[in-house]
Length: 378
Image (tube, rainbow, N blue to C red):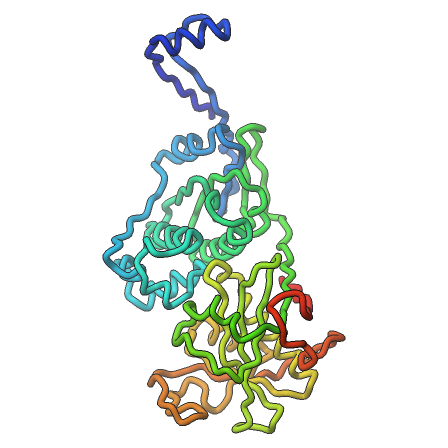
């Protein structure tokens, strides 16, 4: 299929200058021919990418071949973000946003125009893919062009999981190739080459994270994203997780002698920044740090009201539900009354770490370049 774009030129002194300066004969119209050789798409597919530089015709191909305009979202900034998903029941809206890697409860309650670029982009994707009807092909232009490249990778991973789980179809126009292994597209089309490639064999990438002992003050980077409170017990041992030297996750660990001995610990806080949600980082980081504590013969517990984390732990062989799992907590260890809602409660039973560095020998200093272990994921 060839797309022929013609445009009548309205000649004036500016066009006349171009003709004379560049020795071009006077023209009546401009013509652009774009190859859209998409006739041999796989029979069953979920994700396609039209890839190429600016001006190669990506947007034109999407609109002309699939015979529709680009899908758009609409947000009412007088409402909370989640209230804009009013064609869904509240619980379904939370699952949709979480599935797209936007699982920060405080973010759900803020209006769209107050969100970061990465959060807005995820919210747009959630709106567009969530509102698409069955058998509709979703079209997204300039995919990830306005977000940080690490954010783009996290976003792509969350998007492809949701699209495949719901068996939808989406085609993305992008000038960035670094997202391909995260999107795992079924096909890629390059207009400049005029070639369709079946790309389902792309290898899933590996993420390397650094975990570092940090000071209490590091919590300020993360506290507004915690789903219940911005408070953190000052007795907590604090860790920050880095990806490409960017802080992306915080953990606060407290003694928990009430259910064990002096070595027993519990996760007091775990917060993954919204831009990096959707990669399954929280559970993997928990497993890693719990294995380090297990090496020191410390047992780790966690109680959370986050459905995403709770369900992830329920499927993980490294954790076992405690007797208080899915029960309504009455009070914490200091006697303070807690929210009357069922919580997920788990105990780490996985293997201890074989890393050389001891978790209790991490020095408490500035948040970077102190002591670090590498976590390889995926």
